[in-house]
Length: 213
Image 1 (cartoon, rainbow, N blue to C red):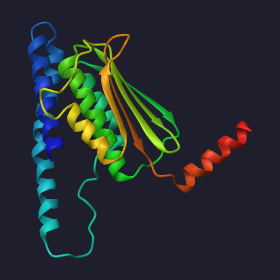
Image 2: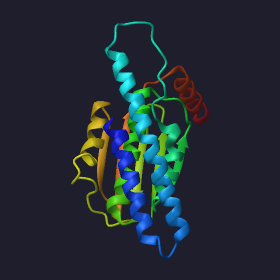
Image 3: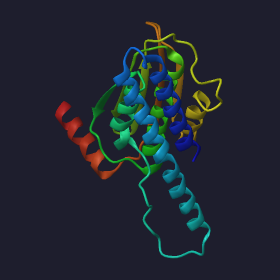
């Protein structure tokens, strides 16, 4: 619940700030930003109601499993996240590598939240006008990188939910996490999340090995 509320409030604050900066010089862009504020403001209460409904349902007597009212977010929402961040003033370039495939729900959600927090920190703290998100599907892990060419200082540590929160998500999944300034300038957040090997990924790996032989 914290993730959803924090992200919504962050988008509202960023868009309102962008509108205030360009209201006199770029009124059309300011209007677009305020429309985004209105949209997010309207959507957030309904999202909270769905979550509270799901929590109440979980407290009731056990019964037949029911489908959630709305699927959890995941990497399928990456383009939407990139568009929202771009509208806030930081262009997001998303690179997909490897063979995209469905991931376990906990890994899919964690990967999305890590990227979400990292790009939000770029907007808030880095002073950069763009960032790169790279998602690399390996046979046994998902590699995530979010890089910018901003100031290069630590991002998000003052909130208590930035780098610490990302590191905790990765640790829960027994992955690896690093974050710090880049030698060429800017800041890099990198995470590697273990992915269980399925019959599909094993077959892909066998074909790759056979081709290299």
